[in-house]
Image 1 (cartoon, chains in turn cyan, purple):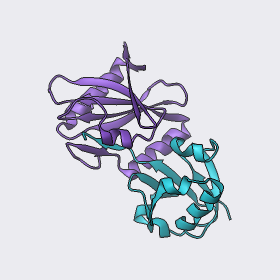
Image 2 (cartoon, one colour):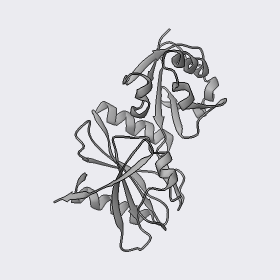
Image 3 (cartoon, rainbow over the protein chains, first blue to last red):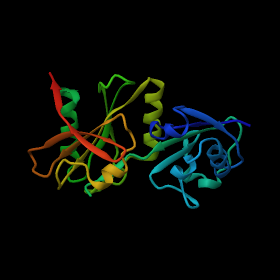
Length: 92
Length: 135
């Protein structure tokens, strides 16, 4: 079972510079655990406790997983998960 | 150093003025590795706030996918401050996730005068850089 996970520039230090890695799992939560076994520390950049971090966007194919099931979103072979750091800021 | 054409420089200023008093935001894409801004992409400020900006996550996905397909990257990430100086704030620094980008800040606090300054923000460190406007 292979799910492609696209990694943004700022997280490629966890993947040895790779723009995309493969993983497996039945849910996004399992997939992130699976990736973290091969790329230690990656999960913590995306997950805070039991929730996806507020300023990291994770997409399953074309949809933001916030609108699907968050960490419980089901994933399957052939899916593409994309991670993008949110672009945000402010006057303070 | 940020090298940017006058036309693109003016587009950023115009966007900041138009959205004042909300913060304006957007990017300028350019060929990957070229460090040359070429394609102006204003973005919706999903926060629609005078003190915060955030790209809409769906819009960001589409824009980033288009850039990947065209072998482009975000060369400039710009936003405006509407009541404070054109210097990265603590939140600007903590959310800076594009290490290759020139972070441009415009301040519209003294309308019609505007400040336009550029910075690199890497690993939480801010370094101001000169801006060269090419005609």
